[in-house]
Image 1: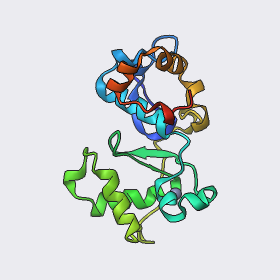
Image 2: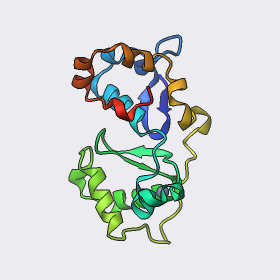
Image 3: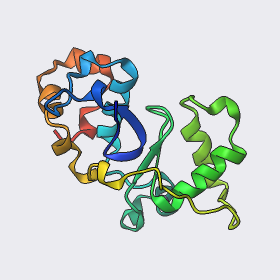
Image 4: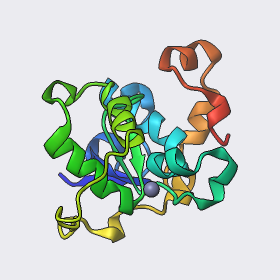
Length: 175
Ligand SMILES: [Zn+2]
């Protein structure tokens, strides 16, 4: 069973769990909660700027920010990063982060605080390699909706109550 990225590197999905035999996204309601939460979160975060760039440049200089390429953490406590700042995150995660944060939604805030306080990977920290990643497998971040045939339609057809239950913020979605 293959593992796939959707939109951003980082979160991996079992292909069989999220796509049917025709390559269509399965109905969200049939997925386990974790996969569903992550897909919904991805629809909100794909196309966002890197969190760390954003902390540096802010809204006034949003054009200076690199687009996010990778996502770490738990839905709603996730961190999205460009490849430059991914190195800072990985350094922090391996060396500085409290173990209790693993799998915890506080992880994102904790990283943001560290970064805001000037936390960075030291020069000696080796660059990350992505030899085990196959870039061809990662759909273009700009095309998430095209990559997920069925998702938009499904979101449109769900009624407000269902969406509320799923905690979707439609304002963040390009539907
Ligand atoms: Zn960045």
